[in-house]
Every structure is written in C-alpha cells, then in structure tokens.
Image 1 (cartoon, rainbow, N blue to C red):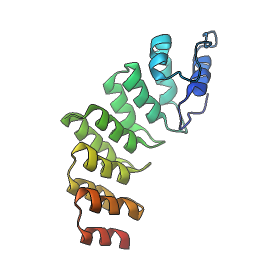
Image 2: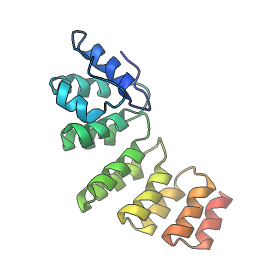
Image 3: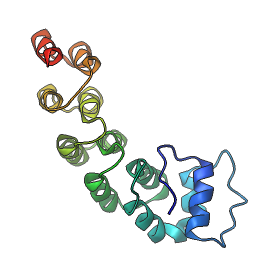
Length: 175
C-alpha cells in the first residue's frame, strides 16, 4: 500500500493511479494536474480510491477525500462519514474546510460536531476559523478551545477577531 501523504500533488497522483491500476496510462499527468483531472480521466477508479483512503494508516486522507469531493464529484454523505470517522491527519480542519466550501446551516452543524469530538489535528484552530469565517458562535468556539491543548495565539485571535473577553483570554493562557 502507498503511504498517504499530507500533500496531494501530481507525483502522488501518478503513484496512486499506478498502484490502483498498473495498466493505466499516466502520461497525461504533469505538474498542472489536479484532482479535477483525476475525476475526469480516472473516475472508473472511484471505488478503489475510496477503499484506499479508508485503509490509510498515516498522512491526511481526509484532505484527499475533501479534494475528491470538491473537484471529483465524490458522494457528500460518504465524504462526511469518512471525515467524521477519520483517526489520522487533521479531520477537524477538513470539517472546517467543508463548512467554508459549502457554507450552509446543515454542513456547519455537522462540522461543529466533528470539531467538538476530534481528538487529533487542530480542533481549536478549526473552532476559531468556524467562528471567524462561518458564523459559529463565539461561545461554541470558546468551549471547544477550553477543552483543547492550544497555543496562546488561538486565544489571542479569538479575543482580537471574534470578540472573546480579555478575562477569557487570560484564563486560557494560564492553563
């Protein structure tokens, strides 16, 4: 099995396609290739790609799955379930990305739940971004941040950009 990287570029795309279908012609894949082209040229590999990322043991498969949803027309319900259950990478950040990309109440509620329950990645930063850019409440983000190990910068951003109180900020940085 290939290792799932944190960055999904054309080199990984070539390796992935050859891994999934050794007979595939990958000559059209060059430096300007992206997941949109993958979906057009290699859509027939969709079931194998889904299984590949479901079995990934390292890297950030939730990022690849988000790109495949955004550019490759992968099923939204499968993508949401995948991100919700992902145990590696930074699924909280990808939940924020889905929310920012879709920007509707249902996807925002889903992303908040993922971020609240996430034990890996950067849920505190994702919560801050949800508040600043997607309309989640300051109180919700503060609660998430209070339950995370964070750097003080996130609490500072919440104070400067999202209206959190100085008292809340000082309580966070004392932790």
